Structure formats: structure tokens, C-alpha cells
Length: 428
Ligand code: ASP
Image 1: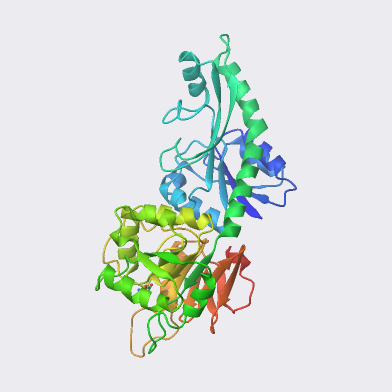
Image 2: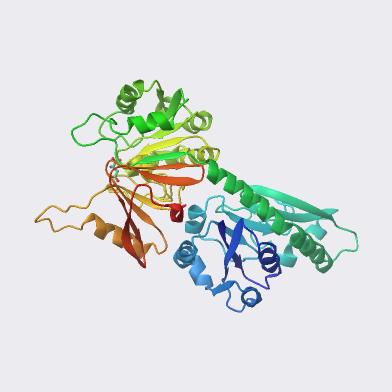
């Protein structure tokens, strides 16, 4: 069941249609209606329909922290903009890649962008002499009316149409098509989530053992049938990418898989897009993410993971599968374009999670550092993944593998342990 938040600024007729459409759905639950305007009638509509209504301010949306926390606290999977006029903050767009849907009252890419809302759009369409207008339902990126088009529906514009009469036609189209288009998109993302295959390993090596020795059996099982992996070596800092590839190849020789590092390719993202499987090695998480951003590898991996291509990461390679790298243990030795990462899972991993604290050491414990993270990132789960452990995501399920429990943190929830075999669906 996907959890949905609807963001609105005005009357909320579309929000109402969406709420009614999903009233008895087993696919999605409208969890909350959030407005940037406390006077919005949409809030009253939501309450009348038994849905939580939350009024935030335009200032909240300019900063982004509060809306993001409210979405996370409710485990929101998909955000619907149903006549929402504030700019969606970058942190929300990063946290919900391809998971924020907007409806625009014209046929994009024309008649979009700044100032193009409500009757301004319809007036522009009429003044341009168009014989057709319509609606565009699309995902958003940092530029308001861009992103990927999910669906468009059209209506004729007649010579005697006024902005008001065209608005009426467009509203009818919205009411007729927005809810079922959202439902199809939910089917699509549910299918993508169910086909995700991830093996997220805490650490490469058990102290005293050879590199990647302990997890190689799990990797072999996970990558059954794969002949070659695209390897992302960018976490290597004090040794070369060639040396890193060779080191991983040595272990992968045992399971008959060729390791092809992407650093030699002119277009590493293209290599990722053609790969049978993807492996991302540990090292310095900041160095790794910086290069991944520079090469377009973050988006390429996200796309392929959603298409069901198996992904193996260890340590920093597991961390970059999370929404951000903010729970790494590494030093920020370089500055990536952003801390936003692949978002293949919704929670944060702290790899190499450590309980012990050296005697006489006055610095923070690992637990203290994570408690600071959750204080500043309300609603976010952090999984303290101890060494020798890994998370396997397959068929819409997640399993903890290893001999140790995993420590779970979230603001407002008492820290607790989960054991191998426990239900982890709350993280998915
Ligand atoms: N430096 C670690 C690794 O990739 C990552 C971490 O400790 O967060 O091995």
C-alpha cells in the first residue's frame, strides 16, 4: 500500500476527486492533504472526507525542512501536486525522485513555466490562436513545469472560448483523468519497487580475512546467471581505480564473474545503463558520490535499479543507495554537488555500525552521531548495519542477513534492535 500526500493551495476540487477515487483502494492511501495556505478550502474538503489536513506556510516551503519532515513522518511514497502554487523545494525533489506528480492545465512543453497558472494559461492559449488545449500530468524536477510527461489529454478550443469557458473544459478533463492516471502511475512504481534487487553489505572485509571473503557466497547467490558486472570504483582514494578493479576481480574470479570498472569508459553512465548488474565498492563516500554526480551515474543507477537490474554495494556502496550519504562515517574530503544519492531505499544505512567506544575517548559514540542525525532529519529511519551483516531486497521484501541484529533509529521512537528473520516491511 503506497502512502500519498496531496499538496494544494486553493479550493481542492482535484484533491477531492483523488481522495474519492482512492477511498476504498488497496493500492494507495491518501494519508494527508498539505497546504501552503491556511485559508485553502482544500483543507476543509479533506477534513470533511476524513483525511488529515495540515496547514504549513509559504516560508515553510521556501526552506523545505518542515514539509520534508512531515512527509517522512507519514512514510509518504508519492506526492501529488493538485493546484499547488509554491515552488517545491529542492530537498523534496531530491528526496522523492520521480515521485512528485504535478498537473498542468495546458499541453506542455508549451504554456508552462513562471506565471503560467490558472487563467493566465488559458488566456495565453487563446491569444496564441490554438485549436486545442489540454492537461499534462508529469513528474517534476527543479524546474517547475518540466520533468517527465506521464500523460496528456486534450480538448478543442473553439473561436468563442474565453479563458473562463476554457478553464471549465480543462477542469472537466482534470477531474476525469487525474485520479486514474495517478492510479496507473502507482501500479508502475509498485511494479518497479517489487522488481528491485539489492544486496547492501555493511563492510567488505571481516578483520583478519581476505578482501570480500565473507560476503562472496551471498554475492554469488545474488548474482546467479550474471556474467559481467559494471563496477563503480570511485570510492578509491589512496589507490588507483585500476588497482581497485583488479582487487575485486580477484575475488569475483572465484564465482566466474567479470568485473568491468566504468572508469575507463568515455560515458560511464551509458555503461551502467547497459549493465547486467551493478557493483559499487567501499572507500570514501564523498569521493564516490562526487564522481557519481559528475558522471550522471546516480540517475543511471536509479533507473536501472528500478528496472530490476541487480545492485551490490558494500560500505560506501551501500550508503549511496540511500536517499542521502548523510549517515556515512567518512570525512567530507571532497564536496559532492549534493548529498542526495540513489534513493533505491527510503531509509538511511550507517555501515560498519559500532557499539564499542574506546575507553578514555571523549569523542561522540556512533549512537550519539546517529541521534544527532535523526534530530535534524525528523521522520527518517536509520539502520545501524553491523559488520558482517547485509540487507537483501528482493520481490518487494527485505531481509537482514548475518549473525548480528541491526539497530534502528528514528526521532520519537525508542531505539531498538531487529534480528535476522524479523519483519522489515516498515522500512520499505
Ligand atoms: N569508509 C567506509 C567504507 O566504504 C564507509 C563508512 O564507514 O561509512 O568502507
